[in-house]
Image (cartoon, rainbow, N blue to C red; front, side):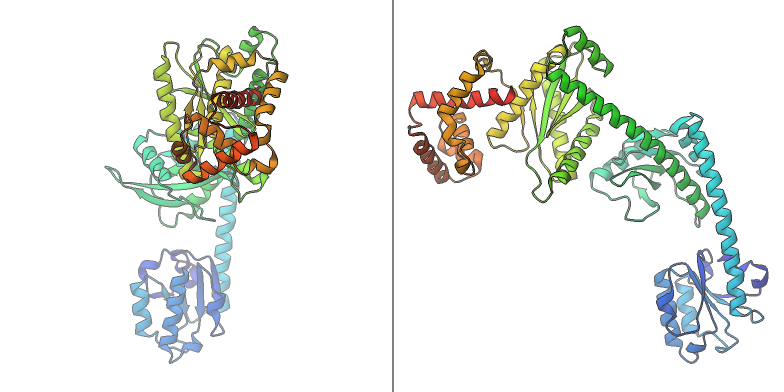
Length: 539
């Protein structure tokens, strides 16, 4: 508005009211020659008029001014000498109270002349801004191409806005900083954990104050990497009023940063696929020698001489409202989230994807004890489970292996983790962390030919696996019943059903098997058959 009043031909214009609103931005100029002009106005419009339709209608003119102020219009310019003679006092009082500029336009200029001069000035401004934006984008792009990297670019942005600047991921974890700002990072992470939404759709940036020992104003710009993922360019300070030029410069920086982050993201995706392929080949026993296995593992930062705990995680159930494709996408989002969560803990971690499961190797120190390692792992996984529920409203369960002393033994540890996860799921639990319990029987079963195991399994359980009875949850009920030492009440408690339901299912099982499950030999055979089922599934 100030620039409008400083144009050579408009210096004779005077502000009648709303002096404090002179900093409003004029984005466009519109002339009124009809009483329904309000329907054609938008934010930042300056309306110029003779007010012919408002002669002797002060209340109607006041309604127009109120509506324009609520819409965020820049102001109202009136050639009041033409018809009004004088702008009504009630209109001026409202404009003054709400800092809405009302300007008396010079009589020697027609409305079209005023509109042309202002629009010409706006066009010149936009042209200059476009040139500046292109030059800034070129400068920042050359900066990246020259190999100076994102850290140096963030430093340049900090110099540009004369304030410390942080580059953070979408979960408010610090990536790059031009200055030490631990309290701010902690405050931002807290807001994220509490579900604070930094941006609404279409917002260019947001400003707010962090209430710390020394309150700090923060201005955050989104850096869009793709539709579902963004980073945050955080300025420790507020932008000056009407900082249109600064916003343009910072947005050019965010565009260049986004492009660089997209390249890094693509490289990370390629590296992840390579790691996943290596791990699958390792689990399948595709490497011919121990030496080859160790050398391949080193290529992916997995030293053989370190101890590892293997964790296998899986979402407890599919989201029924999602199709297969969308469910796979959400599952990958959850596992990406888990991988990022692991970075906040004081141990190295390696995450691999295998079908509907994620496998995590927690790398320890050579002197770590089994008890300490398992306790640390369980505490970290409990926190991750809580965060997954809060972020995705999905529950996640984990199976944990024992500590193995070198990478070459991870294959066995992975089997332990899968076995522990399977055991927890068979018990009907949700959001659990199940530690593997060594079972000598499992090793003995692996020594028996698979055909003999299948024959024994089918002979004892085939009638319970028939599709016509699978929906009755008889297999699950039997597994939990035997696991609880044939305690009906405890079985009902674990399966979240009524005691009578368990009794009915057990009677149905006896009917299908033609045997009493109270008979010790029958119980033993059924336990062995269920254990064989696990062995066959893991093989």
